[in-house]
Amino acid sequence: MSLTSLLKEFYAAPYRREFSRARRDEDDFFRLLVLSEALGIPNPASFYTIELLPVIYEDLHEWHTRMGMDRSPIEGMSCC
Image (cartoon, rainbow, N blue to C red; front, side):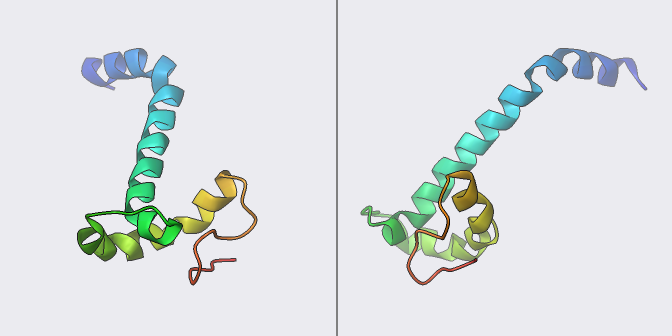
């Protein structure tokens, strides 16, 4: 193990949980932007974000179970 990787691990280890939480929050915000039209929120960029729906659909089940929903909140997109 090199000194650089050892120092990186030493300084990043205490904040790993915070980094993962921040990443998850950013992913949730991105998911909200992409799915906003389906959730009833007007989105002026929906023409561009519709291309990202297949990417978001892969993680939809994980997202709605983490948010405490039994079923998908989006009509026409059922994963359970």
